[in-house]
Length: 421
Ligand SMILES: C[S@@+](CC[C@H](N)C(=O)[O-])C[C@H]1O[C@@H](n2cnc3c(N)ncnc32)[C@H](O)[C@@H]1O
Image (tube, rainbow, N blue to C red; front, side, top):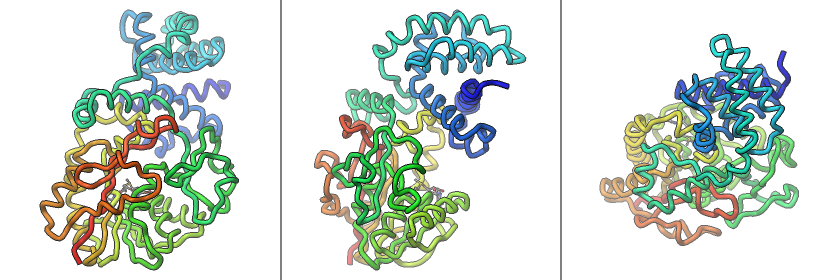
């Protein structure tokens, strides 16, 4: 039997093996039960170690490089990487080194490398913590860095990478009338409440009462731009896990929330139950749904490249090869949704992507295709929305390097499209 810290480290190494060796996302590994055998606090620790290591991977590799004559097998390399990140973040050397030596020595194939792990981590313990802060912010892989640098420029790219290195705070959306003071966080200019050192979400005040839900400040903006009104019939076409459904229901709109994933729809139901809000739920394909609505929110499936600061596994597990299909699906969804909108109605198109092909370009192309579509620029006149965030075609471009001094925000694109009356 290992001590809990060693078990958490072993699981973190397993998660890294999966992301870096099998190109699986952490969320997939977790929902497949990768950490189910651990106690809740060890599970949280393993997850945190894996996330922190992926965030600092390039830095860890730079430090390790000079002590390794050749690349060790992946799981030994990952043990060294986790150990390096822990040591450089101030964890006591003897605990980290002994634990990693123990883990590698029990490995049937690579147990003989325990001496190497011991020697290398001791060197890292001696020099790493001082060297770490001076290392450059890890760069995104080329397949993603090139299109983003082309879209936003080299300086912005460096700022985005700095934002990815910093961890994301916890943002909450409060139900109307809930006093933010009880949470003790910072009320952001757009109304979200930000907590910088939150521990377990379910222990925060107001969780059981359903006073709020977790939602990044940028992710809360599409519904603020939509500005749902009491009694309006609104379709949420890609709804799960339901953050935006809850915002619209809390404003008094009659929301139909649809998503293709039955599992994810269960999360929507749980969220509505906890918050005491109501919506009509449908599990189905957005492309087949029929009806007419006053307003539609299309939060389309996308590359999720705006969420890398929360999901640093993404650039390592993906290679961009699936993005073309997603871009095509977004265009088809937007065209289908347009047909469900009443004359005079408004449609919010949004994605948590940093790629213009999943935002600005989609809207430009839709404007060419639909003569009865125009961008409603006045919809962006909402509290806290900075004038610099507006894009040329009339949408809102949000990036992780915005609000840098406050802790950033997820990358997002939002546009309000209005149909002629
Ligand atoms: C970005 S997420 C939505 C997040 C959600 N709007 C929120 O705020 O919590 C995209 C969703 O699209 C769903 N999806 C993907 N393809 C779909 C389709 N053809 N029809 C309906 N939903 C789809 C996915 O299951 C996923 O839940």
